[in-house]
Image (tube, rainbow, N blue to C red; front, side, top):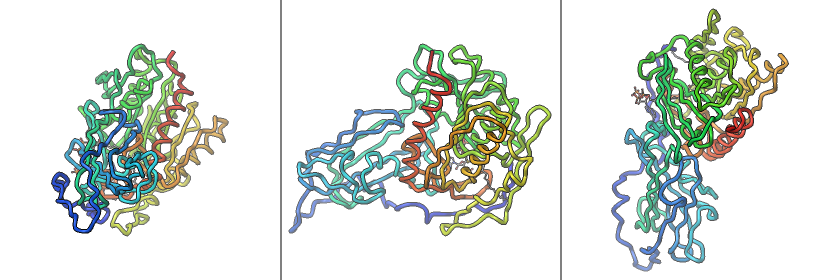
Length: 453
Ligand SMILES: CCCCC/C=C\C/C=C\CCCCCCCC(=O)SCCNC(=O)CCNC(=O)[C@H](O)C(C)(C)COP(=O)(O)OP(=O)(O)OC[C@H]1O[C@@H](n2cnc3c(N)ncnc32)[C@H](O)[C@@H]1OP(=O)(O)O
């Protein structure tokens, strides 16, 4: 791993609105009636559809009924992650002439977002704890989202008129979760409801390691057999890694390809960030990979060597003097990796691959130059007579392009750098990118891997 001497920077200025007391939410203040319109309606109802529960990647229909005509209200949302960190959003609205408010038709007038954003109360959530990323660790439990309607336009002040609690699940009904401990492989396989076989996909996250299952579990709900694969910092795998041995990943590919519920002949790969870089290396060195989706990946080995049999790809040089400081006191490392066109030995030999590629690129990725890497891969593949990859670029989207409705993580601790860095992205554009990217990658995998036969 890259050694780090950077002190951890405190970037609390980035922390969004500091809500003084969560407890105050539940203690409505008395209504002032002296000469002012009293709007509060105790018969207001908040409806969320589907009712009670849904999958995290499903859109919701949110409406309030029983308000006064043109009544100003504030909607608030909140959830806690499994570490107890609170994420919240709020937006100001006005009811229509009939005392109704439908988020599919009414624009938000301000708050955490503005304009017509039916899912803004989810994607615009911000962590109370600075630089904290919304991560789902246990996919067998939902995130519980609390929604509230408050009288007036003061997010901390108005009387609460209605409330709803909605569970956002990560396992669609019937999806099976199977822990995998086969040979050296440490993973979790998610299988759609029977019967199979299903197109198979290996899912890889990035630096930090561990075993994140939420993307694989959601994708299994779309008809794929998806194996979330750990490669370090999990179970009996190494805590850190100097060299990424492709033989480990080969074992995982072979395991999935030979699974009785996985349709052949080849499988798909999905990787983000370092996971995208690894996906590219797997597609270059290993057999049996028909399709790969790389989300903001690198074409160079970064931070560690990649090895397969007697070949090694050394990491690109770090350009420490290119690390910048943002006005928010974060490091910007986007210029801090040497180009693989200069450090040529660090360029992953993609030209050897017969895999079909889809690159999903956030054009405001500040982790590294994802768009440049995708373009260079495309040039290299075509120069070697290989199929031109599909590249989809998302303006103003940052590094962590997640499944729909995950709030943007625009900055945070980077374990490889050892400091808080900016990951880029503008919340609304990033939310749009996530919805599209999720659909695009499913369409791509269905086309390349075939639907279940
Ligand atoms: C010497 C100078 C160097 C100069 C360098 C110069 C240039 C470098 C230039 C460029 C470098 C770019 C290289 C980038 C390459 C790779 C890019 C990526 O891969 S981006 C990351 C993508 N990764 C993932 O998506 C996987 C994320 N997974 C994880 O992080 C972990 O699995 C985990 C979810 C955190 C779980 O792991 P674990 O159970 O072990 O976690 P812990 O609970 O023990 O926490 C560990 C650590 O993480 C902090 N943490 C935990 N949860 C969160 C959260 N939700 N949000 C923010 N932070 C979280 C936690 O506080 C712990 O931190 P600490 O130990 O400090 O307390």
